[in-house]
Length: 195
Image (cartoon, rainbow, N blue to C red; front, side, top):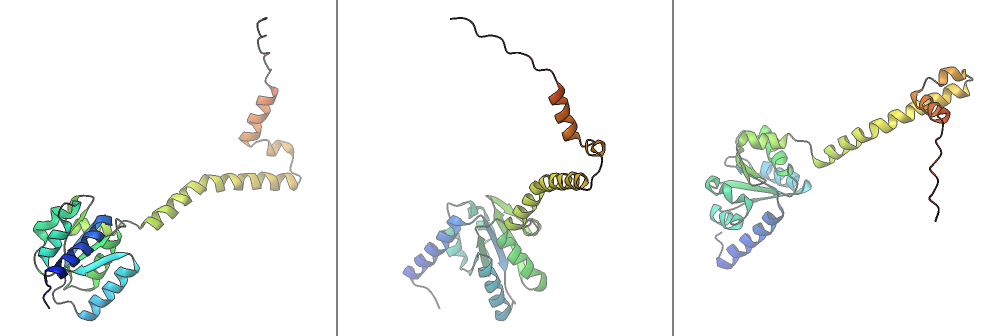
């Protein structure tokens, strides 16, 4: 069914609104892919916050005009499925995972941060861990020294409660440094000038 002028304007406005928020766009040729597989792909994409749509290339070119995705206009040929995501890796990950199990579904290009990506670039972007995974790895890295310190303090406390000699416990550098500071002579502050 062909769209009238108002319908085309509505499609371009809808896609342009999604493009304005997106960081990544992935183009894939879907020729030969079954409807059931495409339905599953769209369901997975929706669950991961990826906007996915089959568009006429002329409408897609109008929707991305004036944006960082405009550099991909020369790749907008043939029957394409357009995927956009606000998350930098979500669109690439969803499309790449689907392409692994469907040889007729072919990734043609992508863009991220104003740069063109070839198929290998899309695959590389898809292999980057998601934002949640990266945040949990960072938190684990930050918690490592704190948890190590807690284990040392717990071990010192356990030795003291077992009745270990004080000499063994004093081997901990923090307590030795505290003893040195306590034994150091204190210099008197200079007297204030008389008024």
